[in-house]
Amino acid sequence: MAMKSKLILGSARTRGARGADGKLPTRMKVLDWGENPNVNGPPVIVNERLAQIFAMDANIFKEVDLDFEHNTVPGTAAYKAAREPRPIAGRCGVDIVPGDGVYINVIRYTTEGETNADHYSELSPTPVVDPATNEALLLTSVALCRHGASENTKIFEQAADAVLPMSAELEAAIEAISKSTADEPDNTKTPNTMTRAEMLAALGLAADDAITDEALKTKLTEALKSVKDLEAKVAKLETSAKGEPAPAATPMSAEDAKKITDRLAALEASGETARKEALIASAKAQGKVVPLSAADLVSLSEAQIKAICERTPKTVPLTPKTPENVDDSGDAGAQSEMSKKIAENCGVKPTEKK
View 1: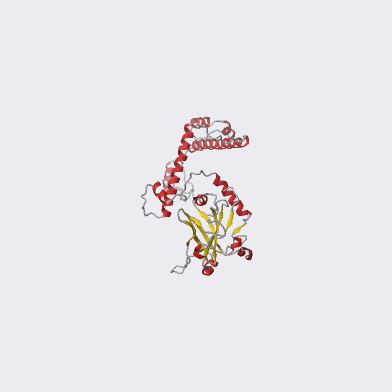
View 2 (view 1 turned 90 degrees about the vertical axis):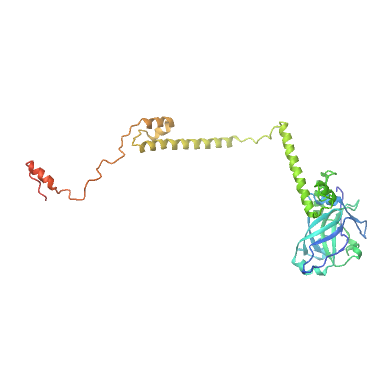
């Protein structure tokens, strides 16, 4: 793709009518596999080259606009007559079917598309082609057009503008894709570039298997991914076996290292103080008076404080001395009869109650 590509308006093709349910068609063919007649020049060729480029990650045209009369393509009469925002009929996904052709799958119709699509009977693709071979490289949009084609061979009505200059943005996009294409090995085949027979054979399926094309491509894509994952694991094991050193870690700055060291030291000091205070609290709970000041807690080690707590005797009673059955409900100054008799027997006159 390292060449000056050209943008053309493709051969018109009859568009599908609404279904019995009144809905617009959602899948329509826009180019055939092989030669597509072009009354203004050589036929547009659709082959494995388009399929290979389409499958690449760099391809930004996997979804395209379905517009009216090519009104989104700079250089056409419809583009010159319209103003932004230029109305489109819908947004489409592009599907390359090897051996068959190019289809669009309508993702959504716009309000304008739903309302006005019946006024247009034909489809006209806008491919980018290689001027040297006229091979299709990309599909940038598809138009609903009013003027039909005789046997699907007539070019879109703007015959004089069939080969158009490309915008700087489109040139840049094609250049980006061309760089990615250069990196692809010539013998690489993806699910989009393999024939159905090759896909079935690769998966060990019978040539007449009834699996759908889409399901077949999905299975093959999954199989290829599994192979690539396995290759990556093998490469990793081979690198490990060679004993190649691991990538060097980014060194930590002295400032960051000091911050971490200071933080760890602070956490350690905080934990040690808490453990010392717990030893003192435990000793107090046992009735011990530990003779240590706040300064002692700082200067003495945890082991020293533990030893002091263990040697300190229990001096604080932990149970009450006052009898629990003392009756303090009566008059403190009143004497019982028993105490009066004791006083009389001892020759002491009982104290009179005042």
